[in-house]
Image 1: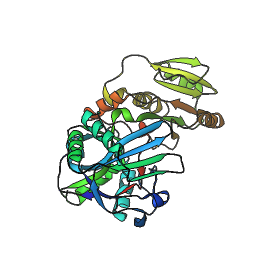
Image 2 (image 1 turned 60 degrees about the horizontal axis):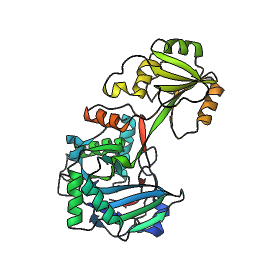
Image 3 (image 1 turned 120 degrees about the vertical axis):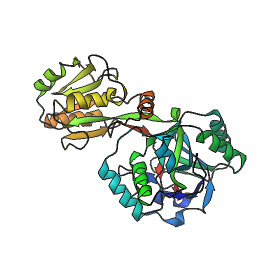
Image 4 (image 1 turned 60 degrees about the vertical axis):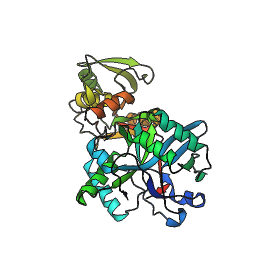
Length: 354
């Protein structure tokens, strides 16, 4: 975590930026443990800078641009930065240990903000300058970093972003671990987190599917579903208009809720699936149950249905919640269960070293 003096808003970040010759050795996707596992070679980085940065990921015609800066811990505690997803205590504890062993941070937290015209102007102006670094990784993603000019441009951008409420897009566990470490240290003033701040229209929202390993009693499951859902056999995976899709005993079903949804997090598809099907019908404990396999929506359906055919289990396919629903949950002070949704693309670790 970085140490700075101002305790409000989005602030310039004191960090080192990777240089192109060393990027391949230290830059990597954020992994499931939310921490980079490789040791970072300080020789791969340039001199220390204090600035705001513009960071762009681009592959082909698909590009996503955010602002990299320091966000005070107090913003996460006081509600100016709002989360929407619950965390798993064992993962938080592991990250606290990891952070204590490797105090230099290179794994950014991704935040969302409602696009501000002034912030967009400064980002566009900065993107027209010569970049600090540009390289393409082995996965074909081009990474480019620009430094926002000090003075007026930095002040304009910091003011525009600092006036917004932000929402955690990726990094709930990293935030929780940093907050725990900050409290254990006596809540030192000026502590901040490395963040990449994206406009809300700059990222894609995706879902996680649920596969229950078999055997599952297909007739019993369908009978119970009929008590609160409309279950319609379909020839192909159902489009995302029902509550969820179901692959069971070699065929697909479109499953739609009967009646009104509850408000907030309880009304999301994933919560309805857990609260009305996985828990009471199949006895599945959320996320931690050994019979439950949580798979990103990017996983090929043929792979998942093949596993179901092998063990006679069940696959539940989910659509991502709408971004407005996510914001509403965060604004209500509620949280979704872990592995509800994820954003693409995620910022990479190892580009900034703080």
